Length: 126
Image 1 (cartoon, helix red, strand yellow):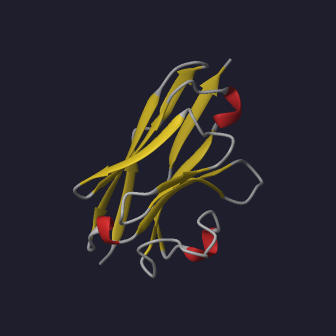
Image 2 (cartoon, rainbow, N blue to C red):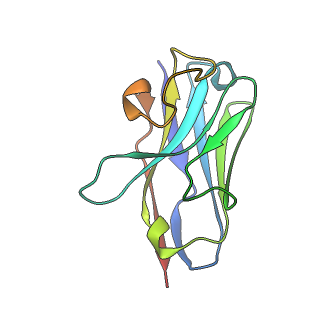
């Protein structure tokens, strides 16, 4: 069975860094679009970053230049630098097993993703 497990969340001061990891099992993540989303209390999940099977990436405007998505074997990473209090959220890893590239699909639409991890909390204090 397909499974995603996130780790690496925690508490950090503004300006600090964290690296989130997502371990995938039951499928080969490099064949598909893999994304990171986050959810603020009372809000829907929003797309943070995505990586396609060809290695192309896309980022939300709010994190571009600060966050970086990458993968190695069965792990997907989100390197988060220069963190801000407004980055405080629950972060989720997601897999779109219907696509290898996002093409004309909206990479940041959570409805396009089939499988989700349980989430990892990131808290940034000022």
